[in-house]
Length: 268
Image (cartoon, rainbow, N blue to C red; front, side):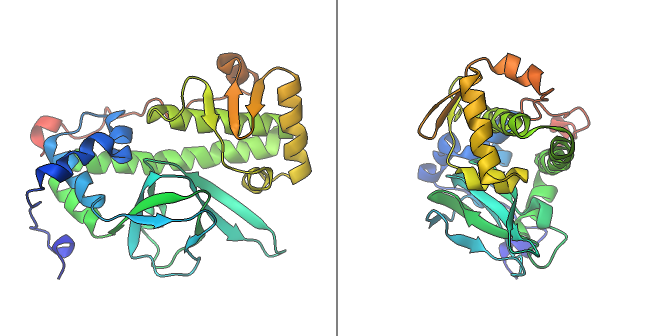
């Protein structure tokens, strides 16, 4: 039995040198945006990030059908979940950015439903599923936050379906850019209204259900109409609020409903 499988496992003391990772942990930075994290919470997160694995751009981290034994904290870089369609095309299900946890949506599965692929060079921190048992027992409030994040993903899928069924290619691309910026602003990686977008046009098309030509045309239209500015992979929204209003964009990242969470004074 590993320590993660022991329901009475107590988090060991963590060396002072490792405690400094609290300050540079994308996951801590991400979660602190929504709730105050206790020392116990940060210790539990530190446990998840003890092991690091470097992956290179376009490397397949996990293939659909592989046994799901580990989850991953995304420490740096971008990854995406993708799947192969019956006609040979690829569909990008979602992107994963620093601070995201891959695998929360796969908890009920014994085998992966999609591939996990690195979009850029990245660093991921693998941890076993059973580590979540320790979080549930030691910090119900932190467990509630992870549940909230997983639930938000379902709302985001609905947003994507609505966009695919009702929006033009130009609006869908703009909506994606707004969503990406919302995500990056939480961890401070989206500076102002600008971001580095490592997805190429083909990958954006695979994510939005558009052709490469449609994405290219949409980007040109957005630039020519003064909505965005592009310099290589750097994209700047010139008037983010007006852009958001034009596509009825809802920021799902700046806040979450945490009112139902357990009382922090009764946990930890």
